[in-house]
Length: 449
Length: 114
Image (cartoon, rainbow over all chains, first blue to last red; front, side, top):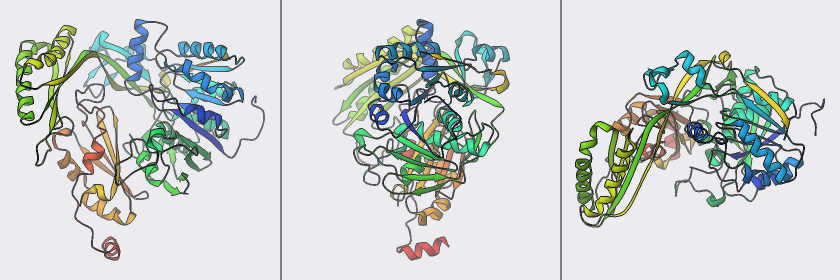
């Protein structure tokens, strides 16, 4: 299965393995065993995941990587033995530790000789300090925040992935590899497309966009009975992309739940995209305004018409900021007068916390069932029950702990408060910055596990 | 009629920006969508949830609209204290918008769109 001088295939099939750090792995085995895909792409990161991983690494230098690798490798053993390839941002804050986890797990399943490629370069904490990078959403700069900046990771594109695949890596991993790039790299490598062939990179980015969110393309985050219902939503199939020059057919494994139809595809096409004519990734400025969606039936949809122009000259960086502690506490009220009793409880909590006001950075109290998500929108009727929800942020752990505990003390507040829960967790914010791409060198390293 | 009767939607988050895509099930309803589901209409409907601008992009080939709501997530997923930090529920809130009823027959609706 070593790369040879063969002609690029006309069609490449790739499967999605994961959409975030805690995604289910139960469909990976079936996808790997299906013989339908030669690449599996694993997106393991969301906006906050990197910063949380950096904090884990600070506490333990051997951690900060994806925590599912030991469980994943046995599911992939036969697939890897048959030459299947895996690309993922398993590294999170510690790509070397992710490689070590893969090496160890491959030994345990007795699969020698697998080549692993590791991509470095996304950790730009020193660079954003040197540049004193602007943080436009906060209206400040990196240096002004001092040691509250706990991480800074640039979104890297497909280049490092292609470099590793050229060196016959079978598993490619890195830190903050951009989500669609996990698929752009394999597609361009296998189909022989140059990384500055912008229309083709735009097309590959479309494929990556549709696969990297996993079941979002197959019926996840979709049902709204009676208008939208999919079969067997308890075991949604992960998407497969059959990529050719200029179009992609998205489908899923037979026997899995969910649906791939025109509407499940459309709802995902522009997910988390702003200007559809200029979707910015590290690889391309993609243009998704000319897409055609062709429902072929049988859970197969063909999409064509993606285009692209040159990549942005800056890379987006997510900067992680230590904001202290976040406390939440909840208490339920039910039956006649539940809203009035919950409001009275809110008054009690606010009065009890008043002495700490100068140490509370932000605070809110909502009633779940009334106004906690969409504001005050109840029109007519009266809720059978509501749940008071206190949330606040403080740089003092003691204040956060005290506030959470106050919701427990509501057992002795207005009548009938029940079911208290509370938590105090680190408040870790992430905010974007932008740095010139030529200041972010990417380094790859390929070796046998 | 409610938008929910004729369209599907999905909302996503990037930082403090929410985007909400809306697609009609029947392409014959697309002109109605373009005419009535304006950026101002969405802004009014969301009220205090959105502190910044609302921009609308038309997607005529797939019969959809993409709304981009700036400063809409209380500072963004990682900063906000809101109960729904991603604004996942925004896709449902938009479907609660009232639209004028369609003309009674398909043919009449077709004329209206011509």
